[in-house]
Length: 116
Image 1 (tube, rainbow, N blue to C red):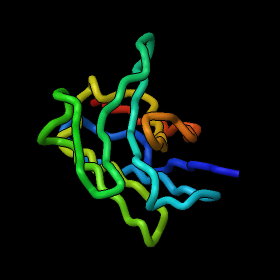
Image 2 (cartoon, rainbow, N blue to C red):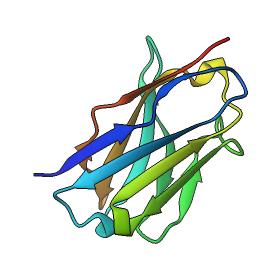
Image 3 (cartoon, rainbow, N blue to C red):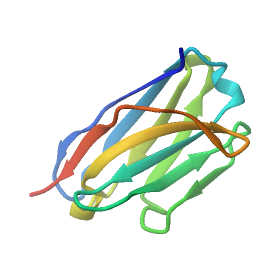
């Protein structure tokens, strides 16, 4: 059974940093592309960052230069390093695995709150 489990969310002041982790199980992790999405209160879930099986990354304009996605295939883990956090980054963050454009799993989400 494929499972994705996120961790690392929390409360942080503006300008602060957090690192999210997403651990995968039940799958050959290195064969899957991975995304981080987020859903802010009252809004749709949107993609924040993506990383391919080969390590190619892509970011939403709103987080470019502040967020970094990475993966460690030996640990079956994808990370999202979030720096210079802003109140508008407040959301539930989800990881997703996909292959050939098809979603294979979603995590349960982790809350990130940025506030003074």
